[in-house]
Length: 312
Image (tube, rainbow, N blue to C red; front, side):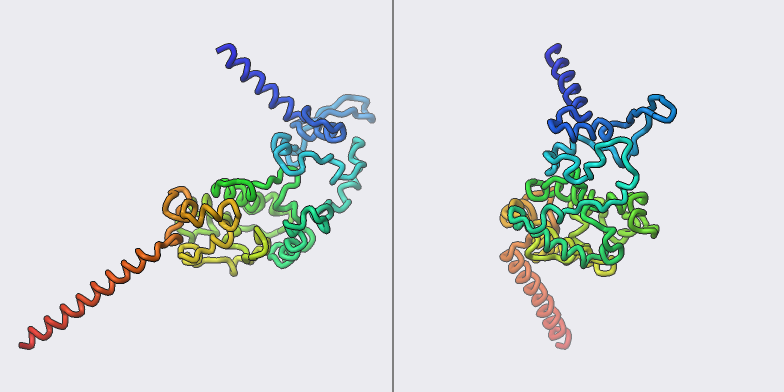
């Protein structure tokens, strides 16, 4: 029991140190996280010659545990943010500088060519988001550079992929404060907009928003051309059929495609991910049609004989 309690204490201390930025080896990032990983920050007020403590803006607090799990975990803060932020108080004019974009690093880099960032950028510019908000709608509106991880490419769990993908959409579409950064319109709650959709909770848990709200591109792992709501898929048969739309979108990932082909992801072997009508067995379909038409023919023949007998 004492040994178990000691392990709990060590784990608590490890998380505490990590959440305060203590595990970061880079001194520049560590300096930033001394304030930006905390709920409060302290500074010396030169005008009043006093030590003061203030609440940190909650939108500027970095969760270092999630940061360490992201793809940019080894970056210095000043790789993306101006080096002038190393001085405090920060100069107000720094907020007017253009933010770094994904293409600033990833464009033209052969090591990232397979991800086709340039193609993604072209698709984004076709999307309803860019058409409405222009350059104000950047990659970071959906992909938080601090926490982004490659779950969609590495996870074998459809539910996990769906949860993380939908969380990106809901970051704005379920938070009017963030939505107001790009739009002045008041948009109804997600559940109200989708009141036509049966079994909402089940759909939101097992299907990504982009399955119905993007134009599928064969040469892109994830389509980034977000369509307007009047172009969104509303036909159940698009997914609930043998030629399911999900096979060209959600299940196009290499690590899921093999599972989909043997039926364990899209088919009848997994209740967690079963999609009605998506995994039809041809021979059973043929047999059912034969039985149907045989029964129908039997009824017709029976009616004909009844008519003949009645006339006699």
